[in-house]
Image (tube, rainbow, N blue to C red):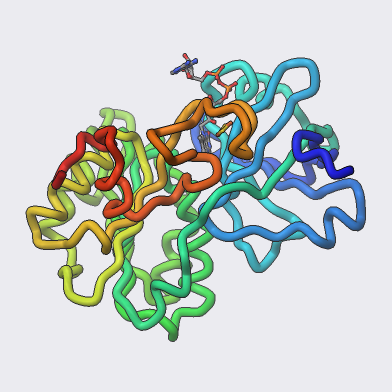
Amino acid sequence: MHNPFKPQQAKIVDMKRETADTTTYTFEFLDEEVKENFCFTPGQFNMLTIFGIGEAPISISSDPAKSKYFQHTIRHVGNVTNAMVKLKVGDKLGIRGAYGTGWNINLLKNKNVLIVAGGIGLAPLRPVILQLAGQRGEFDRVEILYGARTPGEMLFTDEYQTWRSKGLDVLPTVDNVPDTEEWKHSVGVVTGLFDEMQSMPENTVVLTCGPEVMMQFVVKDLLERHFQPHQIYVSLERRMNCGVKKCGKCQIGPKFVCKDGPVFAYAELLTLPESVLGGVGK
Ligand SMILES: Cc1cc2nc3c(=O)[nH]c(=O)nc-3n(C[C@H](O)[C@H](O)[C@H](O)COP(=O)(O)OP(=O)(O)OC[C@H]3O[C@@H](n4cnc5c(N)ncnc54)[C@H](O)[C@@H]3O)c2cc1C
Ligand code: FES
């Protein structure tokens, strides 16, 4: 019988240090059949197991069109993610997934897309950005607003030029610029970019991911600018154990972030008894 908790062995085939505390790992499954059949929707996550240490939910950060070699961009913050620092190309770990809901690309067709990301929150959005770039003609204006604490903490900086060359607008900002770093763009929180952006509510879908407090301000400011709750999609982060709606660890009222999310329409969150993201607009 299929055991949903059994991870499959995967090998690290490449590693790229993104920032001082974040690395992008490229994986392939060892089992040829698993490798062949693996596919995912942008925004979905896998459970990563370091044998003998534990498991953590991590979003897939790569292009869904190239799912045989998939990537995770990981900030080293705790037991599992710090143990990953010691891993090398060729090392193996356990992976099960892909789990949860994703960004629905079909809802974006013939629409303007506004992406608002903060810090590591750009990682779960990168697959949809690569999809939008790859199928550019099927969407109207695409604007990416990205905020990080400092220039050195920005992810995927070597890709912005390619994204721009494909017709996506990228507006970066940082909270502050250390004396040792150079920066020619905006300074301030990501919502400060709302005054610079082209995006208007008409025919626009918003995708946002980042620290919860950032998303709370993103939603609040967008609602004040007359975007509607059903136009805004957020990716939530909750502590998880099983990843497959069995343990209840990630539950918010009747919803399970691992199965009904992590991507939710903000309108859906407003129907919950609990206030999520401050319950702005409730
Ligand atoms: C759907 C989803 C997608 C994610 N995608 C990514 C991703 O793409 N990249 C990425 O880097 N991370 C991602 N995360 C976050 C990642 O899963 C967590 O940071 C995870 O805790 C890391 O596991 P760990 O064992 O290394 O850390 P832990 O040892 O679990 O500790 C991580 C941090 O959480 C704190 N902590 C520990 N226990 C609790 C608790 N009970 N409540 C609150 N805080 C606690 C610790 O102090 C520490 O700062 C995602 C999380 C979810 C739910
Ligand atoms: S993590 Fe177990 S129910 Fe969601």
